[in-house]
Length: 149
Image 1 (cartoon, rainbow, N blue to C red):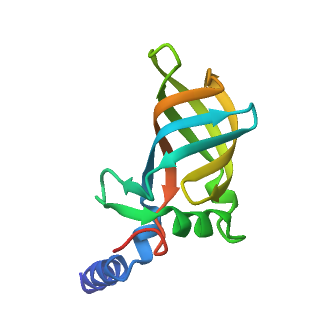
Image 2 (cartoon, rainbow, N blue to C red):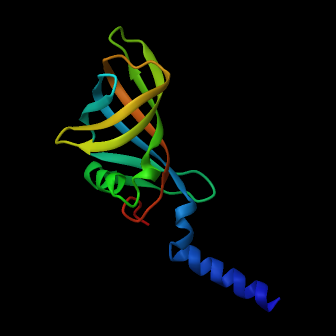
């Protein structure tokens, strides 16, 4: 009984100190007025300056991180492989029709009013020019440089 109680205390301390937080995965959400895709690079134009993040159960985490901070984390050598991510892009085409596509993203870059990724379309289609864009990036790891916990 004493060993079980000690283990429970150790696990709760580990969780409070953030040791177990790496088990949480986030969805990252970026919104922009429009985007362009040349078959290799996706560029979100007039993008919000922050990326929203949130998780679901078992640990609820939510907040926002600046695009610059996210880019530093995404492109760091330590985390580069973990940030080759699947994403879904929701958009309106030039005829005003809503559509989605599934992408694989890498090489995240930030400019003053835009962000870009190397992108590969995995499912669906992505025209050259789209409007009212929401990009949802799946299974990003929660890290202290992103999450404010």
